Length: 331
Image 1 (cartoon, one colour):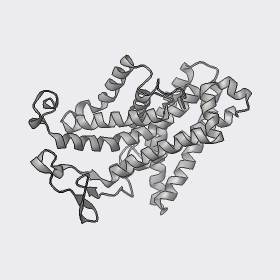
Image 2 (cartoon, rainbow, N blue to C red; image 1 turned 180 degrees about the horizontal axis):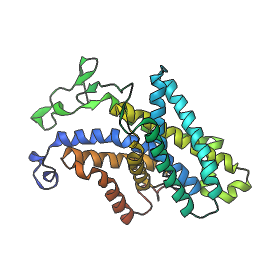
Image 3 (cartoon, one colour; image 1 turned 30 degrees about the vertical axis):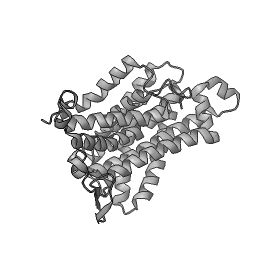
Image 4 (cartoon, rainbow, N blue to C red; image 1 turned 45 degrees about the horizontal axis):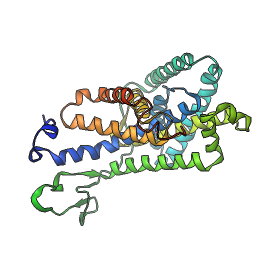
């Protein structure tokens, strides 16, 4: 086991600085996928106060849809676009058929319905496509930047830093993969674009108004049903983006990927402040880094439970989440 305790107790000379930095870098990519899924949780909860536990299965269905579309010969950007439209419309239909009739039934009935939908979708995909993992037809680029601040390009896929004095920050062991940069960049870009959409466009302002004051929003003409459908559509479409990135990064998809990643993404949304768009990104990155640290220090047995341990700890100390109090606008 690597000397994780020495990070807190031992002298700096014993600290595995480069291993630590490497785990932080790797955790950003893992957390970025959680963040993309968490955006959908935050949007739906912000408008309906509903925890859509079926959202993780939309992530899984999207990954499968794009995989088969690519297998049929479509370029992956076209496959992604079609997947976003298909899964987005599926989410809208799901909301109209399963959630809309329960809007006045309290919070428990929609919650149980969401859990039931999650199990139904998971078992349906398993029955139709089989329980075994399936290989993804495309992968993210495998090139890497061996060191962060580079000045010498050795090959098209690898950049190496010169040695720094005293060896304390010898970046020789630090690897930043192109695919990790891509996943992180997509998560940050999507979060920024979504926040811009919610603030600068008429439909986006309608979503925010409905999240803040539903009754007042109706009185001023915000189309209630359309806005809710749009919220479900956007959240599901972003889950498809996460599904594609996860499938390309892992080179496989399974019917069970939605339940695991979906629960962690929900934890990320609550951790960052559910209903707060940047909070989903922050929560996802925190959980991704924590998970990667545990794996790196030979504590992978606890990595799945770590997300919920951190969630419980934060909720005890700050129930509104990390960014919940700082932002009055919830969506």
